[in-house]
Length: 92
Length: 239
Image (cartoon, rainbow over all chains, first blue to last red; front, side):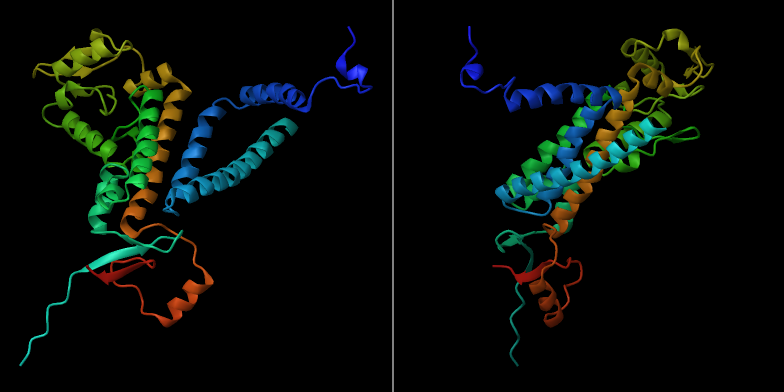
């Protein structure tokens, strides 16, 4: 049976979301294997962002937005530190 | 000669950083103490129930999760040679955790030689040679699979001493049984305590905010904040 993509003259193996998922899954698994207990840290990151946001705002919607803001910043900074540590470990 | 009318009692308010509305802090010191006792309780007392509920569920949730991960052994107060629990300094920022831990620690070290109701919850680990009551020794031998009844030696004065066959005290057994989960549970409870410091400050002085240009010009023109109030709180006549 002719594949729909071939019929249209386009050769795609899989859609971007599937491709991303197929790439991400082994990476996340490798990351979790290299850094044991990393998933125990994620709720703490969210908790710290939530409390920090809630002590700076009164409005629930503003608290929600600030929580996302702080999660991205904290996660980014801690992620960079972790990446640097892993890179140094890999180099040495 | 006319007497001036007594000044109306004053109320301490903070300003909401979102819409500029006034937040009645009622008695800030009492609110801060309530938030220390149970996270969010001070905010509930001030009528800020949404934030109070949010703080209560998240911080108490983190504390209970940490206790669960650490097998119920990660919150205790102990200041003995070789068994100093520095993590308790962070955990003590939550009264609901600090008070039972301090009670259990003082009772175990007191003349009774056993914690409240001989319960191992929040009790510090035994160190080698520590005298305990017979009831607590029996309770530990029943509750903890790593502790045998033979690990306790009877003394002439009626108490028993913890003399395990293996080296180390009870905390070594906890670390052996729980592995890294002991440290993860400790981390959860420590962070819950540290975050509660922010909650206590929020109950005492209202929400924190970064100063704007308008605030800076107000500071130059207006009076300094009253004693006992933070930069963002004001004293207004009570309605």
